[in-house]
Picture: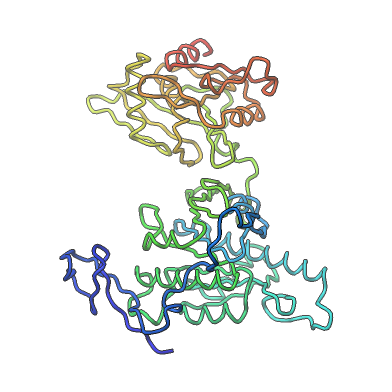
Length: 486
């Protein structure tokens, strides 16, 4: 294959240069020239190939809106985040800290898909007049796409095999390719036609068409674009493993997240056994879904009741603790909010883990102005148990109740939960899908709930038997109610 010419394009003004320069000669911006493949004299249909299949112009009313077919991975928590399973021709990007378990989870999922495909084909038997295929990729019907492929650029095949033995995947028929050259990977995908392929990782893949090193912005962008085109053209689902920066965001150009269909983040503390996988973008399902896994000696196992890991086990209620019901996608989860208020001297600190620090400062101001609880000379520390991150404002009421409980040294009653957004005027605003939150609390045996009045059910509603629900309009009412209940 003849090597294509490259050029350097400015990110600021779009100007091009035949070689790299520190300063763009067009707009005088520094360090903005990025290497890319120069446009050749090839036909336009090859130069401007779309990432998705093209079709004729039609109206929305004439388009069939049937749901896409999904293939379950064998891991319910992963299927939940993906929207039900792997989609044919879909491209998934998953990122996370080193050692968090990305490769482990994907290897388990590939082995489960391979085994389920073998059972299906074995039950159906080979087509009439066709020989039963053989090889490392497992049985496959003649002329059909199937099997799995694991492309590793960071480890050798022996290391992948060692991990599979450690995970208990004895006799695994997952095909493994140790390669980082894009052209060879695309040729292998075209020859083997797997149903799903994993590229671990996209930062290690390079194309001969570019002179920059693997992991550079140009290499990551071009390689991801070629792999996405291959997935859409062949129907092979491709999972790209991406590196993350020290801030936790996916490394590489932002356009990488725009190219793919689904973006997943693997979160959690490497010193803890629990992992969270969160969907940030999903063209085939809901976003902000969350899956919970536990790291065991045999790999990652799904946690069916995640609320249990976000609640501390206290024999008796303790001051500074309040349980709330947060919503992650379609899943309500109970999370314990802990607060510690201590004398801080002339320069008190405000520290939050798992919650927005700026919102904590705002809530302290509202607490002082409308509820008469002053923490101006106190250190305030707030933590969400279990390492979960809560971004929704429905945690406001629970945070304020936990702070007040710690400041006064009085514990909230046993079986107490609270949720609701608190405004600057001291009003308690309703949280979305409040009925589902209350059902989750009642299911887990909680007995007292302080919620926004708009979220409180009707008096004759017997859905929440055993759960006494108090609706409040103002933060003053919530504080008075918590004081009387405690």
